[in-house]
Figure 1: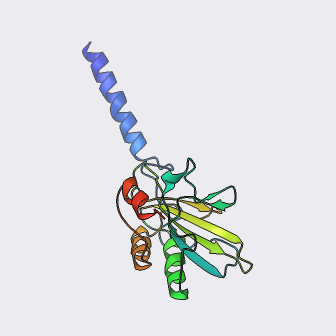
Figure 2: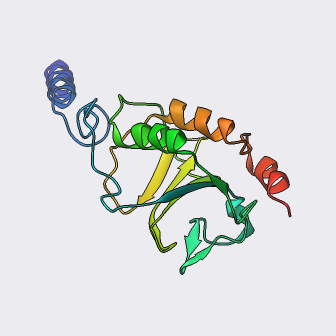
Figure 3: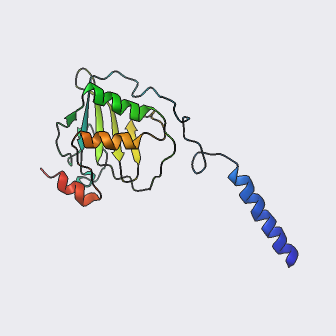
Length: 175
């Protein structure tokens, strides 16, 4: 019986030692791309960026654009037009890879930035949940970790509501 316990203990110790040194996408993996790397996103020209706050619970689908239309829970369909300096702050925060940040599994987005082309067409969309630090971008191509601190500050500077919980955003987005 003692030999069995010794063998089991050695097996578990070997397993932990081998798993802790193997990098993989997920726990223990380095951010992708490497911290400080700048990506070319959205990869298409745009002439205007507008930021929005929305109550994702106003519809079953939580994405900002649903079948080509804006989410019904948007606070102001006109959004807030970013100045050229704010666009630079935004794109720097989005396109430069950051170190790992804590995340939780909630993903309840309440903020979006929409990049528009010269003819008013949607070129790209960035949706963010500041509660869990997760985001979804269209098209794909942003780093795994973006500068959420800069994004949070910019969102506040734009005068968009920042709070906690769905009830806060439901009340903030009532028209």
